[in-house]
Length: 83
Image 1: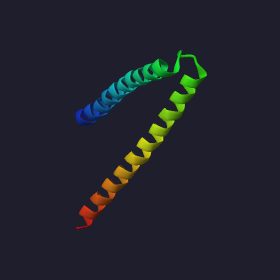
Image 2: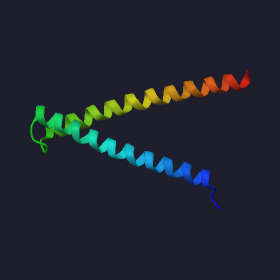
Image 3: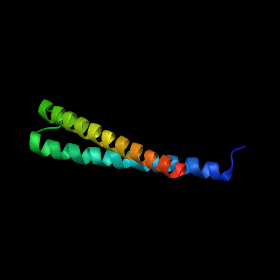
Image 4: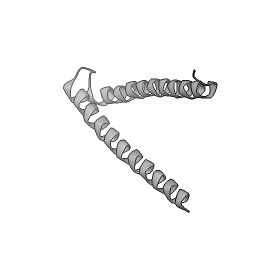
């Protein structure tokens, strides 16, 4: 049987993920609108290609930055446990 605390923890994680997904979709639409405004119709190759390249670069940079921050935090926690 699942405890109430575990149930609430999983539910909170799912709801948070759902809100993050909706926010991501909203940002996706906003960024696409900006690209369309400056580069032409939504079906144009330059607009789609530019969008894909820039979003990929931003995603890679953000992923590396987050991984470094998480690694740094884990190292600091390990040092604190040793002391």
